[in-house]
Length: 401
Image (tube, rainbow, N blue to C red):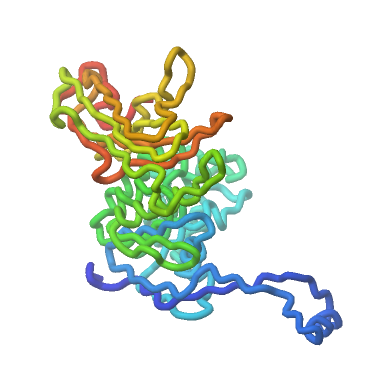
């Protein structure tokens, strides 16, 4: 296979389900319903005329709000569902990872479940034996492989299931909402594994609500809305529109839905106020700038992300505190700017991205995100040198709690 070869082709795909609306126990009731013109079901179409292509080596993102049709699309690609209309053509061996632990037997040992699950994925025993040691090493549960699965913790089961899926030597890896499995250390390990796959020639299809994962890993993406593709483009284009769609569904305190183009917050950005390559002896200054068009209480939060590791950490308290009480940053419409100083004495040699979110607060203290920075609206800075005490980052790149 080569990078220009289409490995998954979806053409004019429509999937319709028949949902029963009334019971018809026995032939007599069915005949009565037929004579009365009752069908006894309604039609539900989660996918309507979907078309796209995935090439060999793509890390392809599929995003959309809950109920948009994402999981139905993945299950159709995986041949769990058959198309009502259109076609799905897959070239190569596809490994689906749609639900954690499907096919596991709690009465079998971890080792026996590896071979069982591998067989369900279409691999022969020699093929599973070849990948077995890698699966056990990645899952980090070697001492328990001869224990019955029912004695595993939920986290151990998740790690084993995920390890089987990603270590299976398939041409195409199909993943549905799995980047948050396991504890933080295991998530970091998974992220490092996905980074190693980028440019490796394997094809990854990822369904996720995590837009940072889309931007970090994917080279192409689509956004599905109401069973149709509304954006087919770059990860940034898809992630930005997904964020806007979520703003549309965020209600303000008085119950009014936000406008489609987010007229509540015309702009929100974080800008550097000093040079952006610094040493530990210097301070990094940044300003938070936003405009709000209604008289509502607004608060903001800022997060820092290691650009290489992708790990985010809230460096600033996302509540602005005055006199020990939680208060709004602003309560009236207008333009606002706040300046922060970040002392860099505890930072290691890394590149960072600063992002932010604006929250609307109701009388009960409930927060709803109304705007977030991304792309050009966030800012970057780099620290050169090593701190003496390990800093916010350990030297090997792991974040300190």
